[in-house]
Image (cartoon, rainbow, N blue to C red; front, side, top):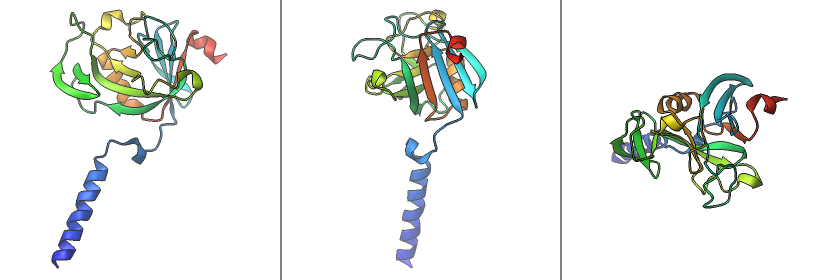
Length: 189
């Protein structure tokens, strides 16, 4: 009887551990959504099943498009959402190494530009963006919302906290991300 109880306990604990696992290995890829970031427009267009459902102002890198390590550039081309971080965190939550620090920063707080609210960690799918994941290229919230619409980042794609939180609820891991240098309309022709 003791062995049966212990085996049931182990099975229950294993199931709970697997249910709480953050790994994308246990989830299916999001094939319904595509994020198109137009560097020339400084705008993200969200497609669901091929139709635009949202559009947000963003900031890409001050130094333009590229993928060399230590370049502080935004990688161009096709990528995917590899991992997501920030489930249930309050707006303005500061992240360090993708972990919440406990600090919350207000919009346009002076003097700092931490990663806030939510994080989509991107993985490059082409030779020209193969370094995106090891460079820690994210789509993330920024407290420097007054700079959105202009190239202002150090490589990542920045968004307003309310926008990244909304996007986080809509888009899953595996979703396609395309960084283009042309206007969005031109990319569809």
